[in-house]
Structures are given as structure tokens and as C-alpha cells.
Length: 129
Length: 222
Image 1 (spheres, each protein chain N blue to C red):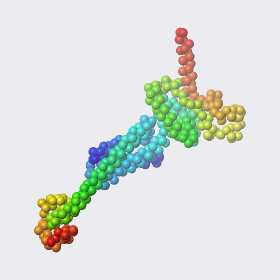
Image 2: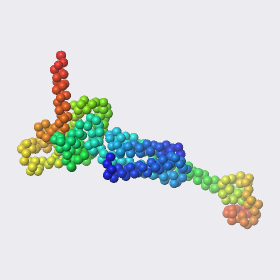
Image 3: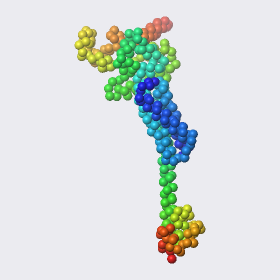
Image 4: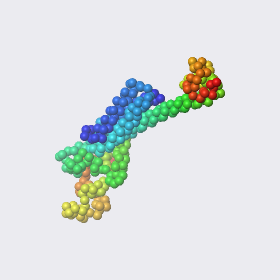
């Protein structure tokens, strides 16, 4: 996307140069070039910018969606995994969702039986003995 | 270039700011954050659009000037004659008029009516086509006999200013006798013997070319 934007910036400079030329030297050829080629180049550059921003925005939204889906999946798998969900509370469950949370137990896993794990985990109250 | 044209100044200002933003982006190459996108929106989008819009208006004004019309070399004698204070040709007399001023070519040769500007500009594109393909390589002397107005000059253009109703106009006997034909456009105001030709040097070149052709034909063995 960065490359596309750089090309768009370069094309815009070309279009601007043609337009400025037509204003400083208002003879037929510069004026015709500015009003045809210059504006076409500028429009193409603006289209490229719009495309790059749109793609970037979609990519970010998709990344956000994947993150949310992972978090939801982690939350859904928490009751099935029993007390292991307590081992990866909060954000770490997104980084290592599902069964892997057992493989990455935080220090809280040792503190699981205590009531202190409840506020940290939220829904893990069922798993607490 | 007219430095008093506000459209031109605004367009140049927008182009300068846009160029600064774009050059900054190309040199610094910042990450594509929201701030960068806003900068690029101005640099690639809003400012160039403002430049193009105002540049179009400035360009439109520029295309109406006599210097623009006579910037093609074959039109130089027409521009020189119109701007010559000593010339008494019809075109020059209108060129001296403050109301026509530097736009006297356009004022007389522009089409009238709602779409007059558009048809005039389309006609201008034909001029570009003709110049590029047929007249570009010719000298002024070679081109002059070949330059002619595409359609007869319409009297409606003259009548826009020279009303056929005012007493001064009607005091002229020829005007009164030809009034209906003038209004109908069957007799031209700019015809030989009336007020024309508008560009006498071009008429002379046409006549000389016709005489040369006739002489060449007479000299050719049949």
C-alpha cells in the first residue's frame, strides 16, 4: 500500500506540474494538456489513494474481527476447559486460545483455588471449587 | 499571466501547499497512520481538486485573450493587426474598443446563446486539430491564403451591440434598404463594400493566391 501511495503522490505532482504550467504559460498546448492529461493523472492518483485507504481500512477491520472472534472463542471454550481457563485470564487468552492456555499457565494458575481469581477471570466462578 | 486573477492565485497557492505535503510524504515516508491519511487526503485529493477547479476557470479566462489566439504562429498577423493602434481594419477598430479590449477575438468569434461557450470551445478544438495537422509546418505567408472562416460570420454577432432599431443606425440609407436582409443574415455586415473585410491583409493574401492559381492555370499547356 505504501508503494501505491508513493506512486499516487508522484502522479499528483506530475498532474500539478501540468496544471501550474498551463497557468503560467497559457498557450494552447499547456492548457489542453493540463485540462486533459493533467486532470486524468490527478484523478487516477486520487483513485489510487482511495483504493489504498479502503484496503488499509478493510485490513484493519478484518484484523479487529479476527481478534474479536478469537476472544469470543476463548471465552466460549473457557467453561469446557474447566479451571484451566483461570490459567490464562484476560488478554493472554487471546494470545494462546483454547487448549494452549493450559500450556501457558500464568502465575494465577497457582492462585486459582482462591477467591482472588474470581474478579480477575470474570466468568470463571463456575470453575472455582 | 495575470497576477490579479484571484482564481489563478488561489490555484497556484493550493498547488504549492499540495506539492509541499507530497514532497514531505515522499521524503519522510511516514507510516500510514490516520494523520498521514489526512495529510494525503489534502495532498492528493482536496488541494489538487481545488487547483484543477480554479485552474480551469483561470484557463478559461486565458483562452479568451488575444495573446492566446495569436500564440499559434499563423495567427500572429491577426493579433498584430488587432493590437496595432494605427490600423483601421474592422478587427482593429473593435480591438481598440475598451469593451472588447484584450478579448476582441473571442468577443466577435464566440457563438451566442445558451451553449455558445461550449460550441465555441469545440470550434477551438477544431482549430487545434487543423493547426497541428495542417498548418504547423507552414510559414505565415503560406498559411494566410489557406486560412478562412469555417462558417459565414453571423450578423447576429454584430447586432448584439449594433442594434438595428436605433435612429442613428436607421439614418444610413444602406442600412434601411438592407435591414430585412441583414436581420435574416443573407447580406453580411462584414462583406466587401460594407464594413468588411474584417482582416484586410488576409483578404489580400486570398486574392493574390487566387490570381497566382489562375495565372498558373493559364500558363499550363492543355
